[in-house]
Image 1: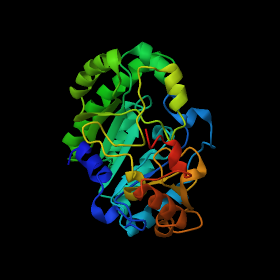
Image 2: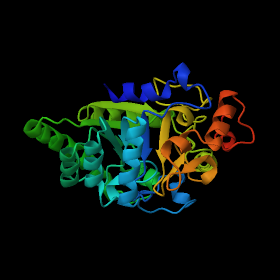
Image 3: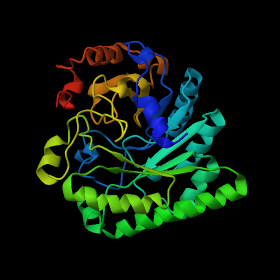
Image 4: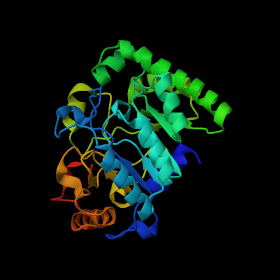
Length: 319
C-alpha cells in the first residue's frame, strides 16, 4: 500500500467512526521526544508552550503493548519532536516490531539521518521513513527552519544516503523500508520553486506528496501571516493535497491517537497545549482515555460542526 493510500485510509472517515464513542484507532503516533533541532516558522514547538523532553523507555514499552492489545496496527514513532534525537530510537523500532505491529513508520526533518542511523533503523524493522522537506533552496531552508544553511546540504545528502542504504539492506535481508517525502504546497512563485525540488525527490524516494500549510491549532496563524506571506494556512487538518477532507469533523479526534512524550493521549495532531488532552496514560488505560468524557465532548462538537467554546475553535475551523 502506498503512503498516500495509508493517509487517506485514516483521514477519510467511514460511518462507524462518526460517533462520540468509537473503536480504538488503527493508527497511533507516539512521541519519543519533544525535542527538535529545528525551529521552523510554521511549528509552534519553538514557542516553548510545554516542556520538551524524552519519553522514558519503560513507559514506551508498556504503552505500545497496551495499544497493540487494543487493536492498534500502525505505530508512528514521532509526534511533535524529532525522533532521531531520541537515544533509544533503534531499540524503540525493534521493540515495536517484536510486539507485533505490522507497520512502524517515522517522519523526520532529515538532518540527523546519517547512513549509520538509517541502516540501524532499517535493520531494526522500520517499515516507512518519510522526510519532511519544506524548502526549495538553502536561502529558504535557513528562513524556514531558523538553523544554519550548512545543514541544507546535509539533509539533501541524507536523503540520498538513506536510499542507498535502504537498497543495500533490502538486498541483504529482504526487508524493504518505504522511503517517502512530503512538502508544503506553497503559493505563487514558491510553488514553482518547490516543483523542481519535488521532482528531485521523486528521483530518490518511492513517493512524494504535498501537504497544505496547517496552522497548528491556530497557534501559528499570525506569525505565518506576518513573516511568510507566500503561505496560506488552511482550516484544521484536512489531510494531504489530492485527498483533502472537510475540517469538521476532524479526523484526528476520531481515527488516530497521539501520545505525548509524557504519556498523555491527546485528540489533536498539534497539541502544544493541554486543551486537547483525552487522558493521562500513566494513570488510566488507553481504551478508557480514547473514549474519555473529554474525548466525547470534543467529538460531539465536531460532529455537530459547531466547535465554538472548545479548543478546536481556534483552529480556524470556520475559515
